[in-house]
Image (cartoon, rainbow, N blue to C red):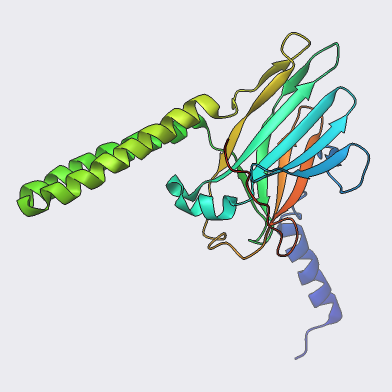
Length: 243
């Protein structure tokens, strides 16, 4: 016997009252942003004879410059952990104070918009030191098992230790302080290298031309630097040889 309309209506109402209400997602706080734009007031681009590109954005009391090596795509693949590196410089010209930075992040635009924060220099140094210790242990184990490879393995270990020690020293002394600080008339500048992991499975090999958005997160807004490597198709800058 066919069910009456009243039966189905009653059943539907019962199911609706049992099921939990739809989730309501709280809207995340959105920070205002200023974006580097070619030709816009306060925005400049300079290819230097040192082989580096410079994007600068200036607003009242604050200037931020992003510096990226023109060969960074190649260099990153030769660097430990294939880290992508950039240099950030900030100058405060006001009479009060400003906290810098809250965070620095990069968007790998052509790789599913993967967003990475820059690596803490202490954690990075510790990771590399642990890898050195592991390599020393493994090398000693292999030499003990195959004495004939002693010279080859020892030479490789020494070279690895040398390069790793130099990189640890560089990261420890030249990296942008992840704890940030206060810029004021007595301390108007902050600058240093930032390194980003590229080991995310969504990033993969570099394309011939890559697009990025580096964001400098301040307390009240985000300074965004969209840039490409190379900046234009076929673009290449020549390095001035050292004197």
